[in-house]
Length: 221
Ligand SMILES: *Cc1c(COP(=O)(O)O)cnc(C)c1O
Image 1 (cartoon, rainbow, N blue to C red):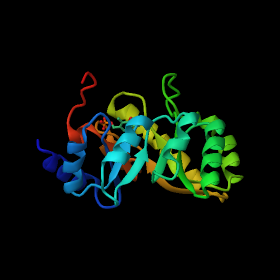
Image 2: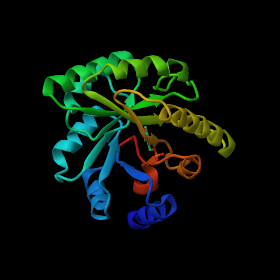
Image 3: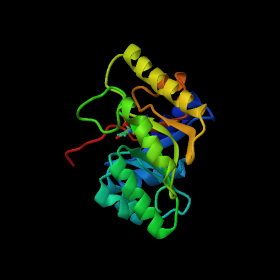
């Protein structure tokens, strides 16, 4: 299928109320240009180096950049003030560094807290039991605003996906009912090419789709 058809199909199935992040990692600027011309404005990258390269070389003022992969503390300075949303706040020390870098520039960081809902060893994100502590720390920040939660769930069948997404939505809703400083539960970022329909069925309002838009990634290039 063409990119045009891919995007049309995805937009039809996600509806108007779900934000679509085009995950362009490993894909060349020409592919992004095509997606841009088909109306997409939110682009997601999982590596800081590639993100910075693309921010420097993709010349459209109205693009919103999303850092969706693990963020190392020593790389925060390269993206501070340049991205719409950091999806991957996953530790107190990273929070401190984001606060510090954004404060020094007198700007506000918008972040999502990444939850490792399946407790997988090789995945980033915090465990649910560490959420309260991180939230407390966010409340005392001056330059970080939490806008919601993000997750990448373990691979599995539809039923296991549904359960993980459901647990995320419950967590999101519970936080939403409480009052915090600096914290708003606006975005629930979950769902990728293989599982976004189930994610939306369970309450996601932000999906991150790569291969479903751009076609298969080739990591050997
Ligand atoms: C690569 C990636 C995606 C998109 O995955 P696809 O299967 O290509 O849709 C979404 N979220 C994160 C964090 C990713 O690294």
